[in-house]
Amino acid sequence: MANNNTKLQEIISMMEAHWTSFKCYGKDDNDPDNTFLFGYPQEKDNHHAYTGTTMVVNPPSTSIGNIQIDREVVKYNTTFTLQIYKDIPSATAGITNANAYPTIWDEMENCFYVWLQNVLNGFGSNLQMGTGSVSITRRNQSSNDQQFQIECKFNLDYFFTCFELN
Image 1: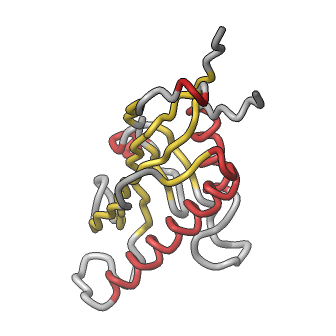
Image 2: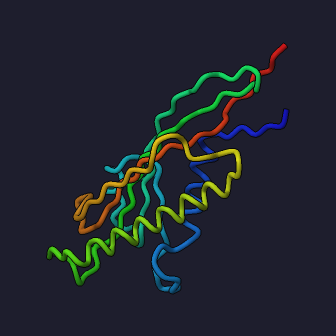
Image 3: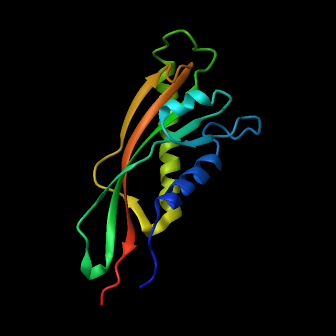
């Protein structure tokens, strides 16, 4: 049987590679690169020097479905939660701008979906969207900074272990 197993470290590495390889907003060489952290939202507070759009992927939770003995595999369903931070544009800092905020959140969500599609494409059939839906929560002035944030939750399914049956 071919080894189509996927490890969590491979997923995290692919997430980081796809996040840091493109710019969310514009293609200008002067735009800051995306930054990536694997950890918890509080750790973002320790990285104030980051510019650009920052993604923080939290350690996921995993459940194992029924072991499919006939296919000799264990299918993992893993729930990922991540936060994406973007600096508040100076034109909107300190004021409530009902017209500007939705546009900024829309741009952030679009960036998330482009990234997620790239991650899924990078793994082909070895990784797929799990059951459930994508959930997005929007915040402004988060992480002790003048930043916008979206928090995204989604499930990914992948095969981790092959059993050798005698």
